[in-house]
Amino acid sequence: MSTDKSILEKWLDVAASGRFVDMTHSLEEGVPYWPTHSPFIAVVGDHQSKGNESYWRTITLGEHSGTHIDALSHFIPGAQNVDEIPLRQLMGRGVNIDATDTPPRGEVPVEKVKAFERDHGPILEGDLVFFRFGWDEKWALGEKGKAFLEDWPGTSREAAEYLRDRKVRAVGCDTLALDRFGSPDNPSHHVLLGSGINIIENVDKLGELPPFFGVMGLPCKFRGGSGSTLRLVALLNP
Image 1 (spheres, one colour):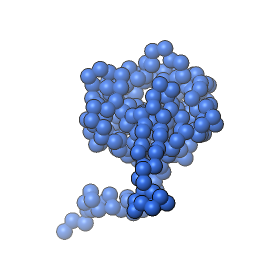
Image 2 (spheres, rainbow, N blue to C red):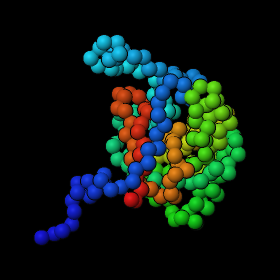
Image 3 (tube, rainbow, N blue to C red):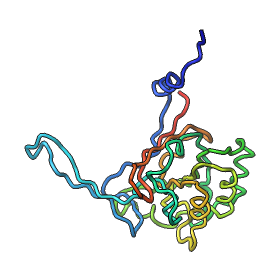
Image 4 (cartoon, helix red, strand yellow):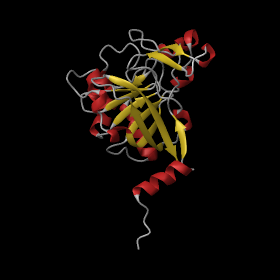
């Protein structure tokens, strides 16, 4: 009789003994948001303190609130919406590229990606690649979070094209957008989304992760949506 474990058994082992890192910023009033989008607003409907049996709130938010995914339709008219993203799209090996030496409003050159590969090994088809700028340390509420909304760095067109050719599934960052602050043409968005590669923004805790890790993300299933807040989780060995 075979002693090989089933996929279910393996997953239960991972769930029981694996180490998880939550790469998701908590959503609450006052979190940074793109100026032309809706802020996060929570209004209490009922609460036990008011003599009600249950507690619930009405939530208002933009599709690109907090840690979120860009669907292809965010920049590409008629392309895939967020409810059409395959479940496996955000499941796989995460790649963590340290780009903390990128200056404000700077762009990560393709040589940075190639240097990572020389040091750690090749980026593979299906990987989810993240750029750590250290910008999550600026995430804060209200006026304290203003620095998060200014002068962030991003990826260059050449770096985006290189990852496109590697056939990765998604590219993420810990900044407000993958393209740098003030970018006149947002090349990374056009190159990646135009090639079927999703973008993940406002990622947290990349500084706690190794060069390679397991990752899984599940967006909300907004029919026809241009994107969605999502819960993004890294998996490490115990």
